[in-house]
Image 1 (cartoon, rainbow, N blue to C red):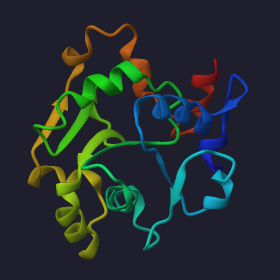
Image 2 (image 1 turned 90 degrees about the vertical axis):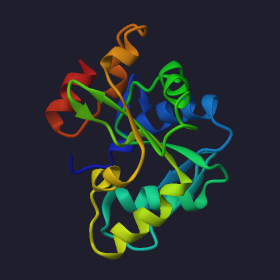
Image 3 (image 1 turned 135 degrees about the vertical axis):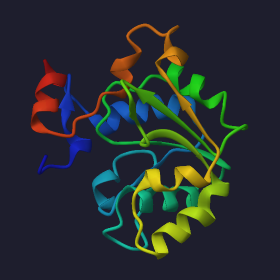
Length: 176
């Protein structure tokens, strides 16, 4: 996208503010992962930086799990403008039974709209140390609950909660 997606505006509000509104209503602790923490100083949330740069989102999950006070942590990408409290609560109902709770919508996993248990840290550390930075490569060694579309059938227009802006075309579709 060649821009910081967290500050794209939808209905006059940056995506970061839209996300924080939902996340702060659901969780007692909200942490932003960014290597430019100064951009987030106006917001009421802790900001953490990656210890090692250029390792992608898996490094962010690692940092978040280390920094969080709780054993299970919800991670969400900054470019998901339609987060929903009810869906996050629904997903949380499985977190005590599994290491990872991740939605699979239209046959696509959403690892950055998922819960991770702190007990995944040693495995994530191993992957990072050997240069394996793909989030999903951690999954086979964890107990994972993939929530399929049938798990969200009771939620109206649930697919919208998993939309993100990866490309300018995606963003155009979102703002329409």
